[in-house]
Length: 351
Image (cartoon, rainbow, N blue to C red):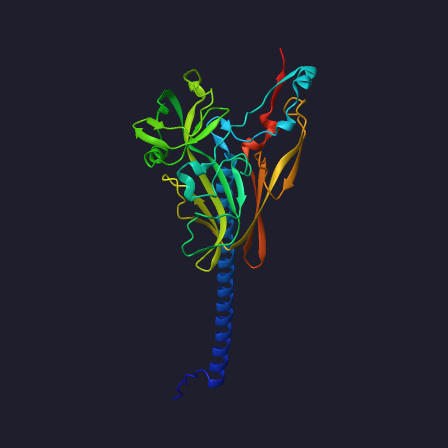
């Protein structure tokens, strides 16, 4: 009687099969690891791009309102570009142009701990846009600051004034309402800005009661601060933000500082990691054909490294250098609404 013999793999066959299996597994593992690394690298690039886009949004938002306090915009027009009355009469066109106000040095206010922040027509760069190496007052515990500070100054929490009273050298303001952020600044006796459409003063409240603010002006208020002009008078917090590159935990990063309700710099917000440098230039309108009605005005711009002491720039260009697989630059063009004098110069035919 025959019996069927069950024949298994020989040792050589087993070794060959095992080797083939190992090769397949290694190939699959290598493909998986490579794909994983590519995905991680792509995700890191996406995260960097998202951080930089968020930084661009924040910078653009702050730049847009720089130098703005209620209906007043500081330093928004180079008076040399305003046509003379003779030219106006000859062209049969009338012109409406903004009027710059006078700000006292903020050393007169509670902000003396932060000499970086000032509004003074003898030393301020751009009436609301500052590019400075003076970083005094910026909290830097555990942080190494590595660039100039780009500072934007404007009014925050703007509220209209519905009543003005003056007694024995003290001025009282009754506000129509108060937002939470403005009320907090008032309660903390932080610096406020009292403004009309043509003038503004930095003030500090001596007392706050409900929606009423009392203060002693350090300078004589101009004649436009009067009851008949209430529709143009407002109060806002004297607010500032600063963008700067600093090393945090061994990583160069873009930081954003802001003035708090107490008038002092707060701890920074980390906007984007791996930002190693920040370069800034400022665009000013070099030519504006004010005699032509909008929108046919022609404009030319000139870029400079240092902002003007008398005018807001029309554009702030920020170039960020960040480290990825290689040093890469990311450019942010932030428009300043008050610096676009060609748009702010409104022309219309005379009757």
